Structures are given as C-alpha cells and as structure tokens.
Length: 314
Length: 314
Image 1 (cartoon, rainbow over the protein chains, first blue to last red):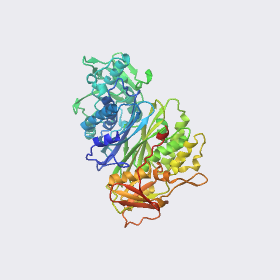
Image 2: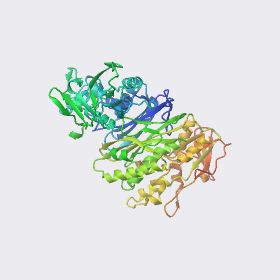
Image 3: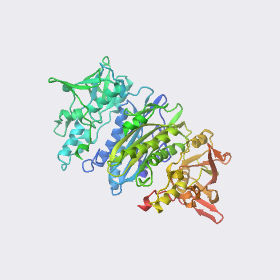
Image 4: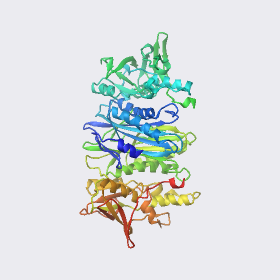
C-alpha cells in the first residue's frame, strides 16, 4: 500500500519532502498558521463494506478531513492516511479505496504526503490527517458568534443521513451511489470557506458533520451564546433519482452533510450564492446558552440530538 | 477520553487553538518548515496488554512520533492522538495510557492539541501524529549521505528487542519495566537531533525504529550509497538489573531503540557525547548500494533483516 501510495503521491508546491523520510516536510506560507485535523473512519461505525463501495469510503474519509479545513476558512496543504486492514481484505478493495481518496485529492490539488499501514484484528480502520493553513489570526473559529448575528447554512441538509436511513430500513437493497452523491461522495466546501474568510464575512463557523442541532450547539457552547432557528427556513435536501424531499428530522439532526454552518454580523450582506453554493439564513444568534426552533406552532427548545452513525442499531 | 484530554491539554506557545474547534491552529516559527509524522501503535503488533503497562503503551506511542521529529533535527510543536478502543476496555487503562503519554509530553514541553476517539471491534489501536518544525531547508533528510562520510549511532542498541525476546521466551514471567527502560520507556533523542542540525554536523539521519540493518538500508537507498560497518564498534546494550549484554543480532536487527543513526562528512569532528548521549562511529559510507559488516573474520553482506514486532510468532 505504502509503495502504491508513494508512486501515486506527487510532490506539489508546498510539500518539500513527502513519503520516504522520517517526517514529511511542509511549507506553510509566510504569515500563515498551520491547521491540523485528524479523523477516524471505521468500518461498522462510519461505513459498511456491503453498503459503501471502496471508492466512496476513500472519498468520504478524505472529505471529512477537508471539511474541517473548510470550516476554518483554510486551504489544505497535505494529507496523511493511516490504514489498519484485516489480513483477508482483498488488494482490490485497497486499490479502489486509494482511487476514491486520490481522485478527491487531485480534484482539489492536495497531495498525499505520508501515512502508515498495519494489520488490524478485525475491521478496516482509516485515520486521516489533513494539514492546511490560514493567514495568521484569520482562521474562523467556533467561538466568535455574537447575539444578533445571523445564522447561515450552505446547500441542503439531511441528504446523507436520509440515505443512510434508507439502507438501514432495507439492508439488502443496493443503492446506486450516483443517485445519492450527498452520502457517497460529499463535496467539502473549501472554496466557500475560503471566500467567507477572505471577505471577513463569518464571525464563527463549523462544518455539519454531527448534525445541525449538535454542530449549532458546539458554536453556542464555544461562543457562549444561544440561538433561534426558523423551522421554515431550513433547507431540506432531496435525494434519489425521484428527488424525494427528506424529513426535517434528518436536516435537523442527521450528520455527515459536510455543509458549512456559520454566523455573520447583521450588517454583513451575505450573497445568496457563494462559490456556486446556495447560502440561506436559518436563524439568529441570541443571548443565553440554549437553541430554539421557531415555527407557526410556537418556539420549542432544540436539543442537540447528535449523530450516532450506526451505534443505535448495533 | 476527549473531555479528559481537553482538561489535561495545556495551551502552550505555538498552539493558537487546541482541542475544541474543527482544526487545531498551530504557529510554525517564521522561516521554519513544518514536519509531520504519523505512526500506528497496535495491540498485538506493537504491544501486548499482558506485557506492557498502559503507561508504557502511552509513552512508547508518543516516543515513536517524537523520535521521527528528532531524526529530522526538528523541534516538536504539538501532538494529536487518535484512539480506537474495544468496548470492554476499563477506563483505568485509558487513564493510565494518557498518564504515560502526557508525562512524556510534559517532560519535553509539547502539548496535546487534538485527536479522535472511536470504538474498535477488537484490540486497542492508537494513531499518533506529531507536528514539529525545522528551519527552512535545514531538516536532516535520509538522502544526504556521501561516500566517505562516517556512520554514527547514539547510545546503545538492541536493548528494546532483547527485552521483547525475553518476554516471548517466557510469556508468563512479568518483567519490571523500571529494569528495562530501553523497551518500556525509551527516550526520543530530541536534544541530540537539534544539536546535530544546529551545528550542521549530520549529512543524513534516521531514527532506529526498524533496526540498525534496516534503517541503514533506508539511508543507503535514499542516498544511493553503500556502507561498511565495523562489527566491533557497534555499541550493544546491557539490560536488566544484572546488566546482561545483549546478543549482537539484537543490536544489528532489533527495532524500537529510538537511537539516532547519522552520517557526517569525514572532516567534521563529532564529539563523543552530545546532549548527554554517547556517540560512536560504527562505520563509513561507501560507493555502491550495499551494506557490509567487517570483522576479524572478514567482510560479509549486511542484509536488512527488518523488525517484525510480533509477526513471526503470531
């Protein structure tokens, strides 16, 4: 695997030394800080071999890491992937995993600069590390939201978790990944994140990996604020060839959409599209420490329901 | 675990934002490049719960990563640890693992800046990432050795693998970790690596994690050179309270000593001790692409025997 990765990895601008030394040597642009994120992708937790083609597993594994860089308004520099693989895993699975991962890496011009491989006792385990950069002091944190700020999301929500729910309901039925890209091949919002950072539009930002209610709660906790969401404004995704609109609970609590959730001071004009992605205001930051959901029926507490992957069904 | 780590992690100079955001934000000193290394530590491969106290597993896990930074002549900035843990693992094991890891981190003043936790199907799996820095263009690579350069090692070799061999021969007998520090609590040679880089003494460097014969082969391959080692010069370790000298095969082929192996142009004077660690010349870089071992009996090819952890016995 390492040999294969080494062949496939290309030296690009900011990678001084890649695979083949004790460490990778990376150039962080002058006046920039380094961003580092690390995420596990585990068989049985984040994917199942019978549901997820290996290419999708590789793609999603990298997308998780890139999305964290996007959520800081950063630019990725290099990717490291460590794989623990069961002894009986076919080489073709690893090749297709690598293909999915490297195609996404290529698309956004980031290189694989290292990693590790080992044998696992049971199940596939990937740990992805993405190193990026942002101009000094300009990374968009979770802690900058102020009462009165608007709350915005990109794209549509709930598509990934609603797709997962379909597979859980009917585990035998194979879905065509091309009809469910939000789940199988999510696009990290790197350009959007960069634009928001360059134009100084966002006061706080996070990517929606755990679900809107949970990730909003992270912003509220780190910024020491509350929030009110407008139920009607929440952009629910459509999935499948038939463009089924997903249930609101997926948009509110489902994870792994990898859209960006951000806040902006009310005087900032947020365009309806940035970098080709629709942006919509879904609420407002308030004083306090709780989130609420407002609709015609009234205003109710919005509890972070978390995103448990397959845990609840195991 | 993350909550615990978050409490324990301290913000130090170069960590702008640690645990609690999408990415950690790190300051790489001006004029420096970033160094990144990632290493798995797997139960059954790198450690066994019945042989290794959890504190030792945590210490060794971090030592592996720090040793890679040392081998570049770098300084560590931040550590990230991702843990996949079986459901039935006692919390006390995790606490003791963290204690071992954080004690070493504290000793060398590096902070934990993030990570991930997840449930594993079977066995403990840790992935350690260490980010460090070195002045631009000054990291010591594996590829700089030239014919005529002297070959040097720090400390003594074979202590770690000879200890492992003892446990394998007699799996029921518990060793006292304090009597076998080279195996249970190895010290990464960060100060030595820094001095060699600052003084411009080393032309190539690697840490001995896979064993002298294998790591020398890495230098030869990356530098496109050969090597001749003097059998009598190789510093074999002594282990246990009784100071038993280990067999030469452990010093030649045993891994995980985490000493530094480096080359230096013949006109450089290498002191016999640097940063408190003894340094000894064990051979010379030659033309060609093979390594040899020379003794009174003659000169024989030195094949990289690798370091297979527990693989051969599984």
